[in-house]
Length: 361
Ligand code: IPM
Ligand code: MG
Image (cartoon, rainbow, N blue to C red; front, side, top):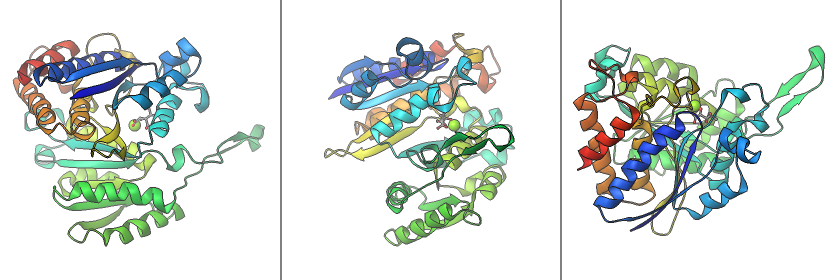
């Protein structure tokens, strides 16, 4: 198979974790005789520095012509006080919108070998296996009107949380479909006791659920969900929620997995006639400027995102499973980065990447 993949390392540790993700992808391509055509582009802070904009047109062009895109992370401290329009993050929001990747799948798993890395008690974490399905191209991240106006004490800032029924339906459909081969349970998370937006969300999800009679649906308010995720995480199978709630809740998932460096994600949009999904694959973690360039960052979230790419954008189930099994083997071997608090000396980013390739064989 021909794999046309765009890599966007971005900023901070994005560069080093993407290098390992690409190493694993190249290894898989060589082992299974796929032809990997890899291109590289600019996104985020590095793109602002080199081109003046966080999402250059050239990157949009490269992403549109690739089968799938792997991304590192964006964000640099020198932009901390910049307005949203001029920040690296704007590049990420731009590419998500340009690719139309409306469903962000964020699996949260407790690996048996890493149970001690989580600050939660073992009996709470053991066996956790959920996917947070986060709506990714709508809601308050993109809603208008937005902006800051006025002066002095009357300065006012506005953001708008907005969804249409069709935006809710397509991501909810994805959630119900994902639940089918799993534990058949969708928990839809909203704030319908306060927000009209959430009332439409809840109504739409409930109506759609009639198409999926074998899937159990329950609804949970987002504040309660934040609590249940640490009180009883095993109760969740698929968590379906809007953009900002999903952003917040998925970082909480990191506490279960032991480190945010562990979490992969797949952002998917349209399905091609072949059945392959248009996808952007990004670890959940940020650019972590404090440890950037030190070969310390955990690349397993990025490498897990490669597994998701193989599964969703190339329908290469065997290759995807091999990467996942290799991640588990590396975790069990104890060759892990410092964030997972290994008993021996921590491995470097590169050592973990090479260990995953070795485990694939
Ligand atoms: C994430 C990140 C991004 C988001 C930022 C970097 C814009 O936190 O992917 O979770 O909020 O979506
Ligand atoms: Mg986030």
